[in-house]
Amino acid sequence: MECPSCQQTLANDATICDSCGLAIEHEPTVVFVPVSAEAHPALSPTEASQVPGVRGIGLVIERGPRAGLTFLLQPGVTTVGRHPESDIFLDDITVSRQHCRFVLDNRGLRLEDSGSTNGTYANEVRVDDAWLKPGDEVLIGKFHLLVAKGDA
Image (cartoon, rainbow, N blue to C red; front, side, top):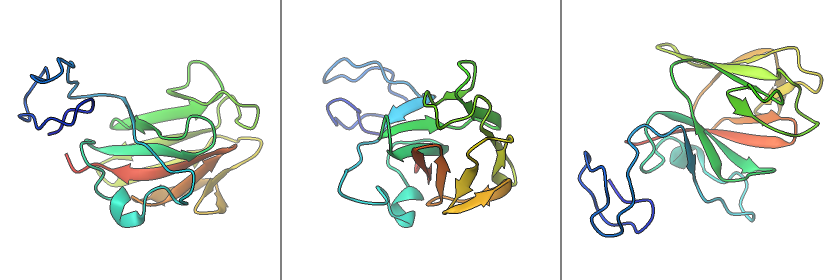
């Protein structure tokens, strides 16, 4: 494992970086993955299948407000919308209050539209329900998210 601040190599069970003193979270819910404004998509399908240092399945905002922010999904239902109580709060008028939800279980990751005004898109196709895999792109309003899986 590598320290996200100074890139010092750490033991997998480290709680503090010996080099810079950063507290290490082992179950973060939000991380930052730098993305280039030049490249689209930010990660290739291969890169999205093994993002270094990330544990589990995540959604990387690759274009739009907050590009680079990654939401790690927990098993069960994750709600997305403009409502402040959404699990993933996307504050933009192009996003419905209850826009969509992601369901992560032992079968994989499923995207379900919640009757949103502008629709939810998976790989450029408007969907009501779709199974997703690493490398797939999801469009929610003006937010372009990429499904990624960590290598940790």
